[in-house]
Image 1 (cartoon, rainbow, N blue to C red):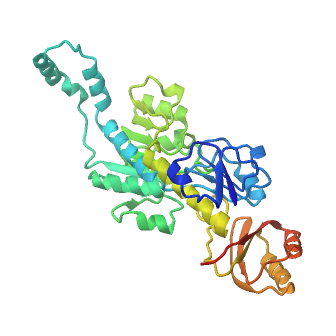
Image 2 (image 1 turned 60 degrees about the vertical axis):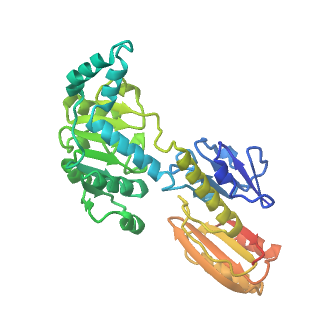
Image 3 (image 1 turned 120 degrees about the horizontal axis):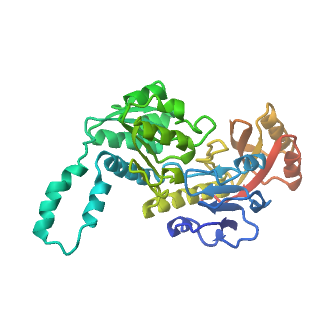
Length: 394
């Protein structure tokens, strides 16, 4: 039986993916094989020796010590794209709120005396509505920085609004390129995108290369009077530089899902309490994806959507499977196969992939390895960990 410890409330639709009798799931698991969490800040001491995998029901993994997990050969999974539609819909609302003073109009209406006659209220609204006039999105230019799961949906949204859409992503994957509408114009650099855009929407992860990407220097490239939307991560922008750009009129409005005290009370900002993925559907999608990924790894050793291990999957051909994590060094697989051959075990199928310093091997064997063979492989210099997975086929 596989044991999975949870640290947050996980959607039942995700937990239902773990069949009773095969998986034991709960917050009080003593020696878990895997961890499943959402926003819990995972400490190193919580990753017990028994843990072989960690999954986060969400895209960001800054609450997990990735480097330490890699050292121990523990794949960390996330759920990219599971909350993409929820974020896209909030970006749509943000763009509409930025282009028209909807918030101000609602506040003005709600501030009126409820004892006012309906006829008088109608007259007042007709007199004052010009205070809340705005502009349409159609015909404006939307710049999307980051064209992954969310960014590609936002780009399509802009086209549906009748906008011209330009995009930039220095690491656009093949899958993301297929998702991207052909009408989106690819820009060669961020600066050229900023200079053309009336609205700029950020959809980037926090990396060394993206931290404070939108800084004082970068803000000089924005079209004057443009609007910046940040529903990615707070660390991507320099909040102090945003304040200066707003004060100078370089930015007309800043809308973000990450409140900061120095932005409070401003009429040119709209701040939300990190609700981009806060929908029932997004939470269910993330939980289901995370559960499926843990199941595939625990039962078959397959890996998908890991932030520190290669994507790898091999269809089961035998009852016994061995998975091995090792440092990505020349000759490692050859040494492993030599030891298997010396035990007169036949390799029915195998797959080897690597990413950066980590290599991962899936090896299907025609027989069960002896404990002595397992010990020899684990004793090889460079081997991080090894799992033997048994499964009845059919």
